Each structure stands twice: as C-alpha cells, then as structure tokens.
Image (cartoon, rainbow, N blue to C red; front, side):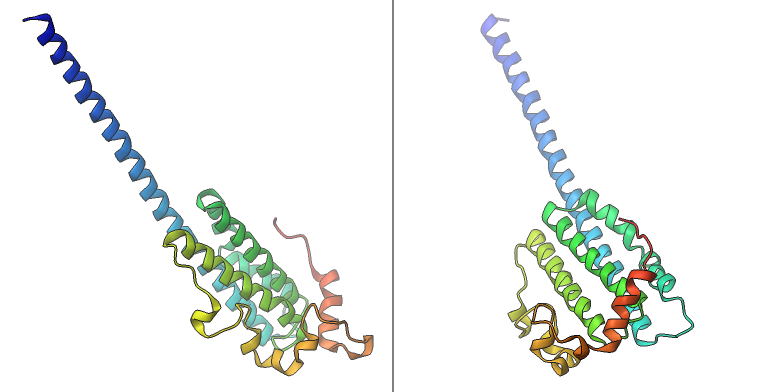
Length: 213
C-alpha cells in the first residue's frame, strides 16, 4: 500500500471517529437540556400547586376561625402539610435564576399571610387583605416568569380584562374600604383604623414563633 493511500485511510478514519464523538456529545447535551427542562416544568408546577394548597387552607382558617383553635400551629401546618418548604428547595436546585427569585418572593408573601392568619385576622379584615393581595400579585409574577421561560409568551393582566394582578379591583372587601385605605395611602388617624386589623397586628408580635428561612 502506498504511503498516500495509507495516510488518506487513517485521516478518513480519524475524521469519522471525531464526527462520531462530536455527534455523541451534542446528543448528550440535548438530552441534558430536555431532562432539565422537564425537571423545571415539573417543579414549577409542583411549587405553585403546593403554595396553592397552603393558601386554600389559610383562607379556610381565616374564614372559619375558632376561638379555641391554635391558629399559630394550624397555620404552620398549612404550609408544612402542603410540602411548600420541601418543594421550594427543589425549586432552588433546578429553576432558572429569575423564576427562583419570583418563587422566593411568592414564598415570603405566603408566610406573611400565614402570620396574619395566625394572629387571628378574619378573611374580611383589612389586616388580611393588606397581605393577601400582594401575595396574589407575587403568584401571577411567578406564573409570568415561568411562561416567559418555557414558551416565551408571558401573560398580562389585560389578557383577562384586568388592570393589575393583585385582584384589588375585583375584591368586594377592598372596594368597601376605598382607595384611600389601601396600603401605601395616607395613614388614618389612630381612632379610625379597623379594630380587628389592629388586634391582628398586635397579636402577631407575640404569637409568631421562629419560622424556617
């Protein structure tokens, strides 16, 4: 066999091997991306479902408050039983950075709602709604971030005929209060605040115990 033929044969073999290795690496990367996207989709759905289950239970506690009930313990159990803490850790492991941040904001506002319920705020009190609507806003911000990552088509309030995500415009309790009593508005005189809201805020400092981070 001539040297030229031998070199050509060896060169062709090396090119074929290199092509096979490259194709295998590309295939592995694609499989990794698909697996990561599948894990993200699962944990995104699981996280908002867990938060939704906890939110539903907190609303039930606020609506059917029993004077003899231990609302501190019951409200903590609402988050624990829904596996919110557990799923949040998985979210931090697999989520896109932006979605993880939105998820943490939603989690913090859910815990704020828990503390108000533990303090005894009823579902129709200003104290409840002052933290409930920011929670709704965070939920929709999380959904928007997830949709933007997964398919690039984020939702807007206008898609539903709304002007904002927090739901105040559709809330009969907030409509009765009027815009001047919403959070961020000018503070009312001490004697004008709702007594139930004051009692809930006072109790929250004494009833709340240390929560997981």
